[in-house]
Amino acid sequence: MASAIDTARAEASEPSEEPTQGAALGRRLTRFGGSRLGGLILVLNLISLLILLGGALALNEWRTGLVQARQESLLGQAELLAKVLSDEDYTRGEPVPELNRDQSAKVLIDRFVPEGQRARIFDRDGVLLVDSFDVSDTIEGQPLPPARPAGSPAPIDKSEARTAETLERANIALGDEILAALGGDPQTTVRRSETGERVVSVSLPIRHVQQVLGVLTLEANDVDQILDAQRRALIPFALVALGVNLLASLLLHLFVARPVMRLSAAADQVRLQRARAISLPDLEDRRDEIGDLARSLESMTDTLSTRMDAIERFAADVSHEIKNPLTSIRSALETLDLVKDQDKRDRLTAVLQQDVRRLDRLITDISNASRLDAELSRDRPRPVDMAALLTDIVGIYETTGKPGEAPVTLEIALDGPARVMGRDGPLGQVFRNLIDNARSFSPSGASVRVSVHRDEEGLLHVVVEDDGPGIPPENLETVFERFYTSRPRGAAFGSNSGLGLSIVRQIVEAHGGVVSAANRLAASGAVAGARFEVALPAVGRRT
Image (cartoon, rainbow, N blue to C red; front, side, top):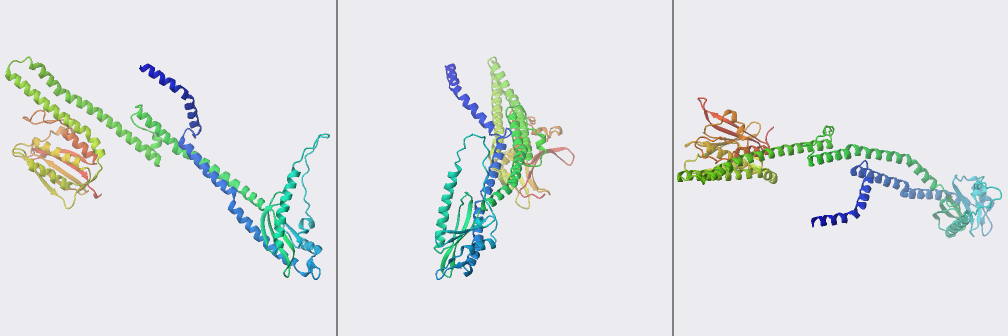
């Protein structure tokens, strides 16, 4: 059944192989040097450059301003020439005057008409009288067609039809402009000339007193040339900008995209368990955000590697500690059926009950220790008033204390609030474990003393002292290891798992503090008890 299903799935997946390969090829083609980020950087830079270049080449606003400026210039020139032509020297006829064609032609010769401009004079009927192109030395011509072999048929020249059509449209547009100017209103237009060029045209009526004698038309066809010159001037800058964009894209690819790809590949190596930590020295030496990222990833993977080693050791220690009571229970159960004496059977039963209690306590402490990291990461740190926390904890011991148990006292030597940034639940567990540990070692009639003070550097110190036998000097550091226990003679076997002080150190170090153990010495130099001290950074501490 499973084989049939697998076969069906394989057959169903076969037709999709080619599209998948095509899609993968498309993704590779969109990458720049194998990097999607590098390709995105290149595309965005090129798009921004093309938008800028397209806007600069269009020059719509600048072209509009150029046309307006050209129209104003032509209008000023036309007003001057029209005023000259309206003088009596350039008119004839009484009582109805009209323009003198010969004198008007002299005006166009004598008055300077700049190159690229054309001036034409029309009479009151719209008939052309004078054209500056006709009275000037300028002779327009067209290039000869290319030579063709003798006897070959003449090519069909479609340009004549196009030229005739353009000329007709130009004459219609000019005729409408002349008719409007003969009505007495100046006209400014942008149109196409007979040759298809963009022309800025101004037409003004020529008046003698109030009578319109004709129309003066000034044209300039250099707008397109000016725009083309501006575009050509922009090309070197556009090429430089293109080079800068390509260089910036390449640098971003080399110094940003590729390092990120290397970090991603190194992270995959760690994920696939081919490496224990990310180590890229050339990236870690960089003094920028990529270097910070590489160092952070290396620190994170080192921490994870250390944590995995700790979990492995913890699992080994748990296995060892659990096997001891289980071995004892199995041995007692195997022996119980063979023992017929009731007293011996009762002793074996007591051993079984003691091992069960020990195993239950061990499993409970192991469960608490294994959940500790999750609880610390889940709870957000906040200011905790240590004086209030210790007062509540000591008050519980005073309320629930039983006869024969060591009493707990508290001394607060602070001149103000004592707050640390942390989690009140885990911190409370720290001091409860220390107090429980001190009470378990305290003889009858002794007491446990808790004190809190601030040092000159602003650190808060919480000290827990007892009157017990103390700690062997060689074990002052070992007591914080997991499953270490050294109980005094007569203590109930299995009542302690050896995880209490290990949990204390783990919580304190998670809060940026330090815990240490030492022996109290009497005046005679003998050991008078144990002393545990927790130092935590206070909120707003002095530096």
